[in-house]
Amino acid sequence: MRTKARHTVVVIPNDRKLEVSYYCSDQKLKEKEKKAFTNLIIQLHDCHSSIKISKEKIKNSEEIEAIVQKTVINARGHLCD
Image (cartoon, rainbow, N blue to C red; front, side, top):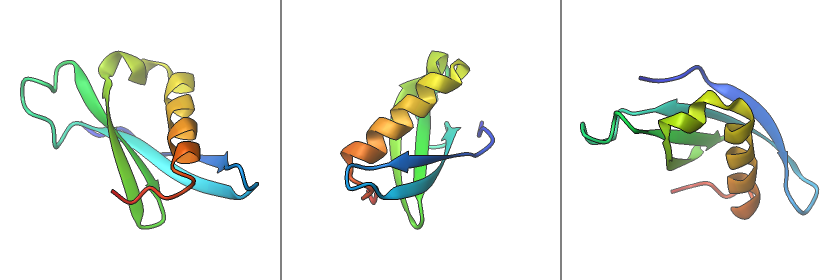
């Protein structure tokens, strides 16, 4: 399962604005994990980051947006895994 990609603008501490895309996918999860978890994929240019989250969280778009914002700010815009 892959959700539709969404986009947001993140302002990092040096006042740079970064436009990032994010979506959820369970392709790289083990079969037993797929019922309860999904991967939140955050993409900035050619770099991406993947975070395993509970499927319950994908029902709340504000919570997903907050995770994306926090992840990009903490990484200072460097998302390459």
